Image 1 (cartoon, rainbow, N blue to C red):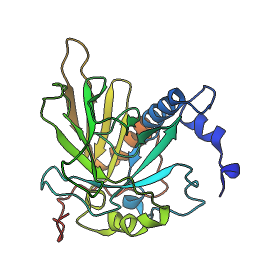
Image 2: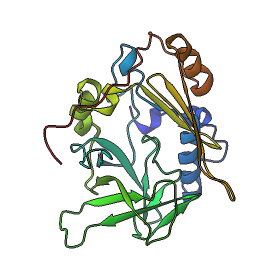
Image 3: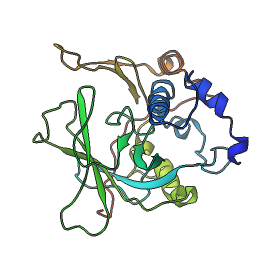
Length: 263
């Protein structure tokens, strides 16, 4: 499938973008945010009898640079294998931007500059992209201060690491299968659906629904969780996330098995 075949208008309509799709940073930021507010990040196909496909026509040909990221497990402190996560780099007017609409909770709302190493604020959050001193591998690290912003001297936590080496979609095929079949994968062990909302984030995992309200001036972060019965879940997915499954979902929230290899 080529760019000529890509249904740009249908995609922009799906995510609620109503502006002119010009080649600009403003449009890139708007499309990035509209996608996060409209398209849930989920793995429900895996837990309802289906398989995720990476080849066209299941996915459009990518016209941006694909990069390979390795997500840091906040429990073990170790990273996932290479090609654990796909991120993209978009170049506009000679400046490079990191885009990622498929990560979930810690994800950033608008693209981050790849040409600066300083803090990049987004609402109540702050991110930065760093490189380790004296490291010649070209590895970059995406970091944040969780739901706080204490300035450059605050406590930074790594989200994932990546390089700028360009990749192709088929490079991710093995890890795509891993995440659908391995007890070492979060996505195999837990049925998940999460979406950014104007107020915060809504997240379904297993048999729980969590509502997060981001802090505004004078307020604090608020979360509330309610347990779900199995027969409630399809209705919640439809009402809250706009997802209707063709096959019954098997709710899952099992502990992960540690990876046998340390990255």
